[in-house]
Length: 554
Image (cartoon, rainbow, N blue to C red; front, side):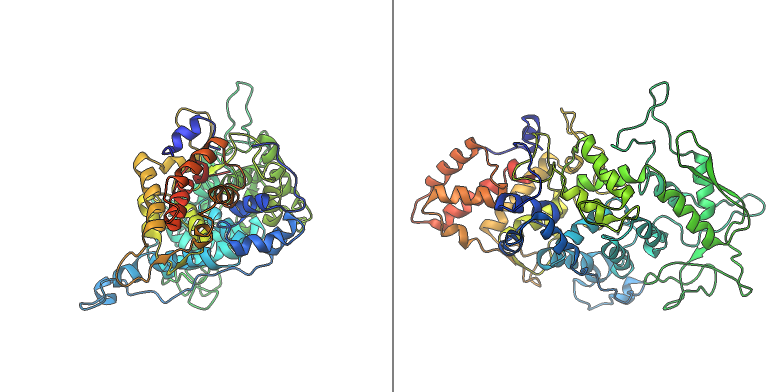
């Protein structure tokens, strides 16, 4: 069996089927493919739960009804590690309390055992769009409320998500909105522009005007049209002034700046007379809602809460939000290279708030957007529509997909597996995500964002992970109970190699295994003595799970 290099697969058209079928009665292949897109992979239980329903739509509706798996908000550890981890503490004290370790373990346990699989996938996608990083917000107790905002809003309205993220203290600290003061009267101090810049460039509308299908609008000289200017950023920076941490357990602030509190949303500071004296009161010029239109103006002397509401409404109603957010969600869940028609259909769902019978009918309904993505004609069916369709399973997804499929029992200490693959969970290196949203696979014209962190050495790390799972045990240290898998269902088929190949084809490639790969896999199985069925199963599983055909979700 050849070693499948992911870049070679891309170059030969295996990166990213027959015509896709619309959602209807469910067969195993389409159910498996749906669970790859809408969950952290398929195990026997989730597959059976989906297959016994009459349609993918019913399977989707069931996922929409599950309650969110939330992260516990623990007490903050002392700021001084010598106090929080004094001499004689366990050697894992610093890791356990001053890093993202708690949240990482919680994440992997949720992903492996939680019912709300779709909510988790969407929340993780939103985390990669509305980025907060543990590089700056290292205490898990500070970070958990941000993760819960994503979990709770994953099926809600994008406008509410935008407000909740804006007022989340972790975001406030990460992008400097918390304690952002109005400019000084002498002009020597100006308001911080970080959040104003990123909320426009990365979180909502992007740099250039978009058509509904995600393509850039062009001016008369065939150049892209900017959505905003530096002046726009400066005006939004004034909107985001006067907010500080809330007094614990209240919706007020005792002073400006107030004591740190990451558990409650930020609040507008008011003095003893009820005046928001740290909020800028000047008139503000916001976004235009059409390429040649006039910008929206906020009048002078408005209350800080009013300014914030109207500014977020202005952003939310910009025509770019639907294609900008919709396309990225498609890329995170289904395919890195959606067609323009696919993006347009998802944009229409965002704008109308309705799709395939899901949604409230209000603009920005994320349930409608998710339904449009997962029930689209290009996403459904046993096999994808074309050779460019699909996405590389990023390290977190790969690890969980493999473990779920092999019925893993785990203590959740798995970030050590994704780290050498280039993804340190919840510790994005920049506000631009773990990998670039726009990344062209070398030698091709295809987008492949996850390939941005898939170096040759990390490709070998992926294969080593599969090898460890099948031939060893994941156990980071002596305090960990580790992670083990059960592949006895495949061992039981080892003496009928053709049946084993077919089962692996259905379970991991939803029936799309190329004929040449089937032939080579069969030969590899038969080369192992028949009196060693476990080794036969291990060999077959390794060759499938390490192959590019599996590591690229199609």
